[in-house]
Image (cartoon, rainbow, N blue to C red; front, side, top):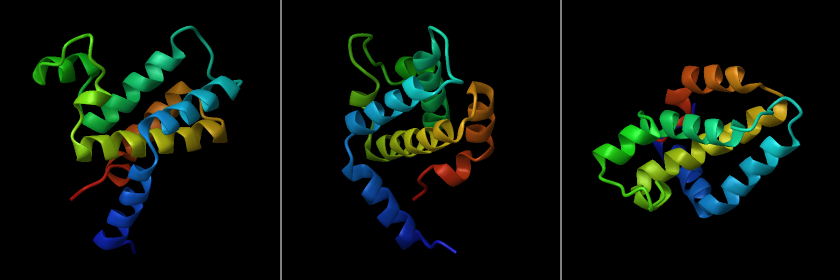
Length: 120
């Protein structure tokens, strides 16, 4: 069983990679997928990641946190929120590479949300 110390180590490791690096890997995974197609797939995957990570959609998060449309959500995240976004991105990359379609990704992420997210 993984204890809190190990979870913290895993989270610290995940936080050492920049969000840009992880996002590039995510975009590469989507691009190389033969299953994920469509003009809005990048946007839909990113919105899903924020929904899982933050517990609300991007519109709600911007409104509640008074985030200007010219500023990215990533720039507005606290440390724990950033770790959660990275964790969900990494998990999404894994399941895209397995061959999940959008609906399978969505179902998997919602079903496994508590085990993916960092909890203090």
